[in-house]
Length: 145
Image (cartoon, rainbow, N blue to C red):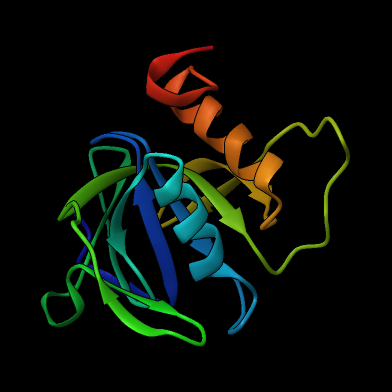
């Protein structure tokens, strides 16, 4: 296991092995995307600071204790939400990349020696629902397709 590294990022998860690591420059929409995914059924893992480590060929993300359960909402302030302490990362979304093609093939990106699918990010509601479907295998509310 690698020692945890602190990343300026956000993480949400639809389950213990479906974490989405959201990276990008400051004010690029990381928390906005995280909030949209939480509204779509994900749980907050961490916002703004994420402790990331690799173990047995998998990447794991956890929240630093000092900010556990908190997410910044621009214009509102810090909110405290129910959160998940740990999640395996299954996908990296980069809010700093230009939009990709309509039908992208996820690129692979290596983080701490672990290859992961990597997509350019967006705060578009359709993108958020697509990520939800990608992670859960369902599109609609409460498991409907």
